[in-house]
Image 1 (cartoon, helix red, strand yellow):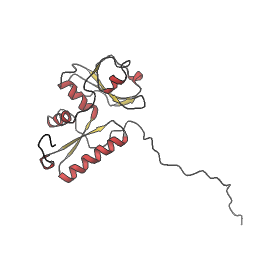
Image 2 (cartoon, one colour):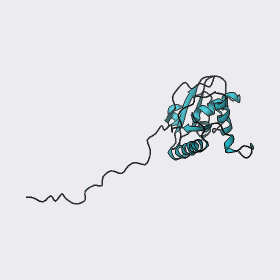
Image 3 (cartoon, helix red, strand yellow):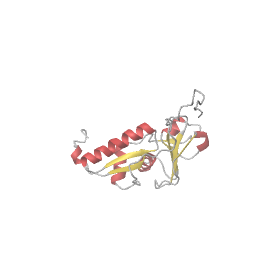
Image 4 (cartoon, rainbow, N blue to C red):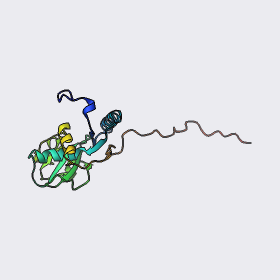
Length: 174
C-alpha cells in the first residue's frame, strides 16, 4: 500500500485467494483478509487461486485457446483445473499426481515447471499475483466466492482417538 501511496481507509473491498492450497497458508490468508474487512468495514471477496492465474495468463497473452492451470500441491502432486479461451473454468479443481493429469495442452503455473514430463508446454505466470487478482475482481473477470478455504485433501492432523486400555478390565463382581 505504501508504494501505491494508499492507506487502509482507501480500500473499498478486499479480495483474497481461497485456494486450493495448503491448510495453514489458506487459514492465515483468509483470517487476515476477513479481519481487515471487519476492521475497515469493507466486503471481502474470495477467488479461486487457479482462476486468478488463468485470467493473468489470458490477459497477458501467455495463452490462447483452451489451457490448464497447475500449481504445486506438494507431496509430488498438483492442483489442476481446465479453462477455455475466454478464461472460464471448465472443470472443478482437482489434486492428483502429475502423471495422472498429464496433458499436451498449454499449462500455466508452477506445476508445469516442476513436472515438465507431464506438462511439456509450460507457460507463465507461475504463481498468483495480488495486482492481477485485484484487477480481475475490479473488472468482474473472475467468479467471486465466499472467503472460505477450498481444500481438496483431508487434513494431515487428526483428532486423537481414545487411548487403548493397557490394563485388563477389572470390574468388581457383586
